[in-house]
Amino acid sequence: MSDSTNRSGNVVWHDAEVTRAMRAELNGHGSVILWFTGLSGAGKSTLAHAVEARLHQLGCLTFVFDGDNVRHGLCSDLSFSAKDRMENIRRVGEMSKLFLEAGVITLTAFISPFREDRDRVRALVPNGDFLEIYCRCSIEVCEQRDTKGFYKRARTGEIKDFTGISSPYEEPKIPELVIDTGKLPLAESVNNVMALLIDRGIVKQTPD
Image 1 (tube, rainbow, N blue to C red):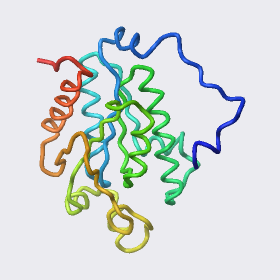
Image 2: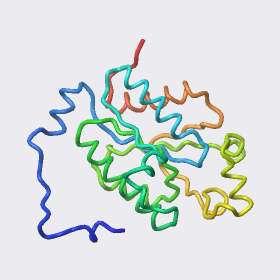
Image 3: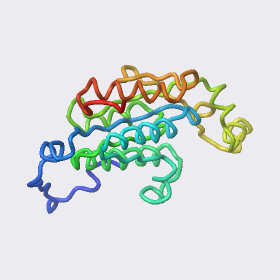
Image 4: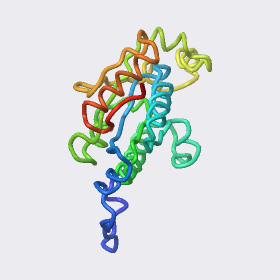
């Protein structure tokens, strides 16, 4: 579904009186979209929530858009067809943009297998506001972690269009950060994300 299908001549964007910069000053930190991408079982959600917990310790405003949680509400009407998966990411991108303007450090955990979909979200926001974090993990390790048996069902054909088995995953070409989630301990992975946020000036320091 393209943006044009929802546009009307009667819809006008209203700029807020309270700006993003004013929110950043009040919050004591900037806002950004942290887009965690990778295979199912790569540890995207685990890492996103662990980073959020670290940021919460710093008093930062945060929110995690988790793939499963979004499917319960915002995108409950969508299937897992290629078209609906594209729409799923489009909706999450638009929501993330609004949270960015609200001054929130927004973390998303979605397979988002196609570069075009991820690049479309990146294009929604100013340069530097979308940080793509590739959770790199071998499919062998992902399958070992698969307690729900999705990979096994995909290999037998029970689940169609499963990323990494019967549907491709397009690795990011130039992500802001690559984390080997199949090898690195979770704490070290969190430290790498925090280092990126500090380097970009989003947050000022980490807890002692």
